[in-house]
Image (cartoon, rainbow, N blue to C red):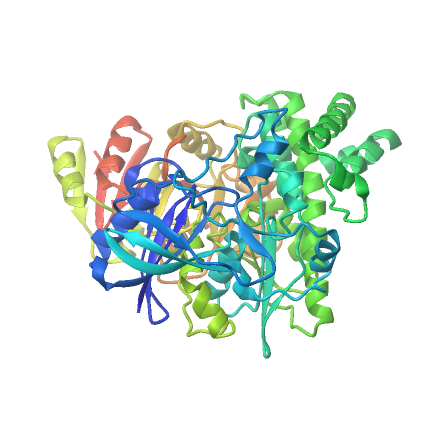
Length: 635
């Protein structure tokens, strides 16, 4: 039976599955060219066009949404909600619109979420107003049927009535992670962003979920009530930067050195911030006040930390690395301190919650040596390293599609996952499940018009890698746009802009091409067999781990301000990047590539060959582009 799964919300994506096999996957932004596109209709249309599946072949629809959002009906002729069936469980699924509006009645820091025009809001999260039950869910003493996370309904799809169901956001995350990584038996999903305190105290699974595959079936972990995402969201609003930029900027404030010289008052203030974002169900205050009260406390504490943090920057020059003196155009000291403090407290909160979940499963006799972390928190590379090194009872993997790009798969498989008690046929897919690059013939024609381009057709990766290395070692930037595109936020070699990590100029060149701030880091790629020569720390294949660079002077193009790097470890010997790295080493160069996503600021990852050619025309630093077996080079 063919099932269509899709995500309604930012990073909209859709998939088709049949008999436990993923037939096709599509991300809306790759076709409509709108970064983090919310057009699930665009994702579905592209999916149907490229897969060859007909509308009449689809027998069921499964959808999920961005946490906290209602379903926006883009085109009711193509998709509409006809009816939601009653949920038999004692906990009801509903949309917390009224709660958000109430919390924001005195302040417009958070935009009210629009209601469904026809009165059928998408059921968003399990609500529980009973404080005793909240405590029981937090300690996993209250048994909750996993079917509570799914709500059946009837839909209109391209004029045809069809049955389907809605899957709660984090349950879709967890299912997706375990489905695509069948060797993992525990999934922990925690939100890397957050709306408010008030949502978390009434919606126990709003911030995350944990589930484990056991011999007796699927075991639901304790409700997280995790507020680290709220902290990061508030820091993002305070700095007017994205959460990703806050994470990158945090490295410029050396919190470890600060803690060595800071006075007791500053450290006490730091601990107060941590305590503010810890959910304490025994604290009456937590249930009495709305968000405006907590945001006021947050601002007061952060103001104090910033005010006194500035003097520590002046006391110790090692707090901000000397490389800052170069023209990096850094944000203000205040924003640097907010970012550094936020990252420190977030790491503490994240580690505590993951540890709590792991301890629960340990006590219940579940093997905890195969854990996958997903949800927005898994994007936090510095925290991922801390968790991997400090929680020694577990081996951690980080979901490549943790940023919602795998949610359509989780929604499509949710019912099968429950029915089969978590055990399905091996569906290990890897990250490269998207469509192929478009408009290749048009790009060849476009390049032929311009006499400055040469187009060659290469049939083997071996020869292609040799040619690419020739351009890399002379300091050029190269485009890799081949095969299927990656699911997830990281470019992992199929839609990448690369350079030589040995050259400091590579960092400047790639950021200039991308039109982004020069203080932002560029990530390295290295083979697993060469990793220990250049880096320390756990290995990760999806660029979701911060590692220490052993000799920063050898890799100036990819070493961040604190001598760290967000390393992508290449293990697939058949992949083009493996061969490029191999040939670099054979020629006496460090086998490390600088790798960043193929796009410019505000643009999604490029999936059009003609867009690549135009990018080359705009940037003479790009000497060559490998596009779907064709090598485009500038004469």
